[in-house]
Amino acid sequence: MYRSVKTIIACASILIGTSLAAQQYRGTSPKPPKEPLAPQNATEPLTVFGYKKDSRDIKDLNSKEVSQEVAAPKGGEIFLENNNRPIVVKTWAEQKVKVVTTVFFEGEGKLSDEEWFEKLNLSLRTLGNSVKIKSGNVSGGSYTVMGNTYGWNWGSDGVAVFNGQGQNIGTKSNARRVVTIYVPANSKMDVETRYADIELGDMASLNLDITNGNVEGGNVNELKLRARYGNANFGNSKYAEVEFTNGRLTMAGADELDIDSKYATIEIGSSKKITMRSTNDEYELEEVGSLSGRKNYGNLRITKLNTSLEMDGTNADIKVRNVSASVDNITIDNKYADIRIPMRNVKNYAVDFTGPYSTVYGNFEKKPMPIADDKTKTENNQLRWAEVDSNNPSRFTAKVGDGGAKLVLKCQNCTVDLK
Image (tube, rainbow, N blue to C red; front, side, top):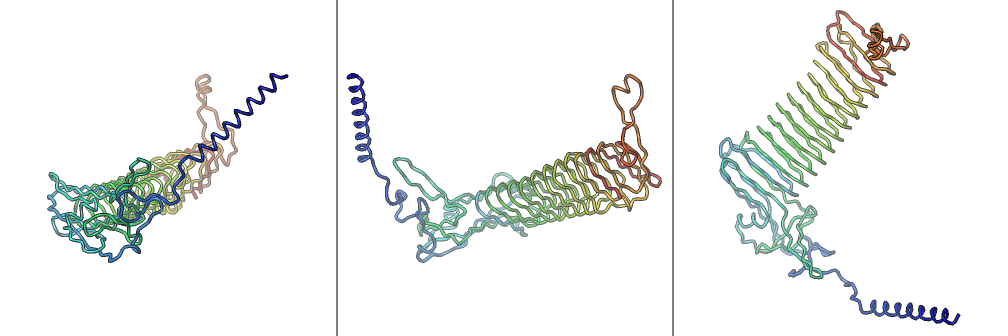
């Protein structure tokens, strides 16, 4: 008993001593600063850790248009690499490339255009048979906290403002620094841009890779587009190859279009030929000659179909508003879908349909057909007839007129309207 009491007292002493030591340690530990730390080597607060110096703090703010230009080799390609800066591309009659932008500064800015381009992280040069343009963020300097040095850039919240010697002194939050690029007409351009919008005029050839930005384009004879997380709007193209994810694409038309899309809305005016691979998209096609490909989930709507439709997929609703009398082939392999293809303008066509648990409407008489059963066919050399009602056989053929156009439809658990 005596030993137990001594043990309890000893434990209590240890606990009290530990608590007092912790209190003493907390009392001597460094306290966090009451005010945010200012950047090192900065004469005035900048946009970091709560400090902000914008146009309201800057006296005698001036602006100046600066530019550079180089000769463009004939038949050469123009490469543009851009990050976080709005771009406008214009064509002109000159056989040279010119880059123009605006610089904001306080006081007297005596730097040359070439020096300002360096401060703005802009470069323009000729390399072999091509022209290279680079446009990036403007460095904001560095700051040190507890022995660690960090750097930052002036981002999309404003444009960098300089003093007369070209040193960063803050931001102008109510302005955008747009870079305008003049290129020869019929130029070939290769563009890679991130976190910025871009506007382009009519072009002969364009290869555009864009992420987190919007595109406003003109007519492009040959277009290669890879876009993620943004919207794109183009005129007409002779040939277009597109990869599009998470956004809206609008095109006035394309003679030939090869498109791979996911989680997007696609609107095309008219096209002679479309090859598509689509996942969970909404497609609106005004007029198409021939369309082929694969579509899983989502909707495909065609205002007018002229020649042919060949499509397979799952859970993809297909609705055609008008089928031209010139159509010659419609082949669909789908399931769990609603399909509407009005054949009233086609006087001669033949239907071959296969699909259990489906309902088909049409202005024709259905002729039930046997469904092959591999086991029965092997053992008895016979075919098994589908056990369905006569109005909705699992497989049937039908013929209207002379049976010219071919409709081969395979759709399980579908509603198909051919009226």
